[in-house]
Amino acid sequence: MASLARTDPLTGLPNRLALEDAFLRAVRECGGKRVVLHCFDLDRFKPVNDVHGHVVGDALLKLVAQRLKRLLRGGDLPVRLGGDEFAVLQTNVDHDDQADLMARRIARSLAEPYEIEGRIIHTGASVGSGSGREHGPDLTRLLSVADAALYEVKRSDDRTLHARAS
Image 1 (cartoon, one colour):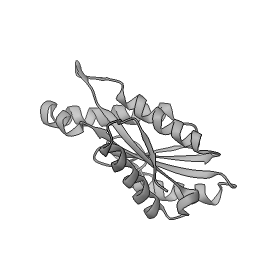
Image 2: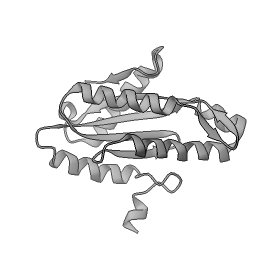
Image 3: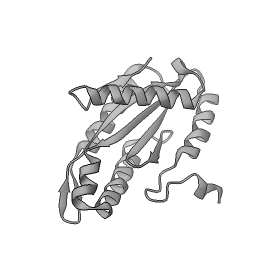
């Protein structure tokens, strides 16, 4: 039951409750390294649902989850927050370049076309990030910072930019 409560039923990814547990554990065990939270959502997801239907939209969310799992290192945690909103908890970050690289890898990977039921679906991801070192061991604050950075990216012309709110 505890495992089910921490898992998104559609994608099989950990959910917000699992993120809270993992975040607190990562902050406790970070050993002077940073914990970075990358928040992102899918660009053009609503039109996918509107044009192709929710079955295709759900299939897209499942494929996004699979890509995330293949993309991340062992200690990193992919999370579905809800709808088309996801997060990645990146642990053991030594410097900003590692976080920037991860954000760009997420954006590039999720921008690759998806084939669903014989259709080619194009979407992308806007990524915003916040660092646990700058914002302390408060996940709510860190989610807010990363979400603000995400919307800064959405307002820019370059969806692959990585914004890091300070």
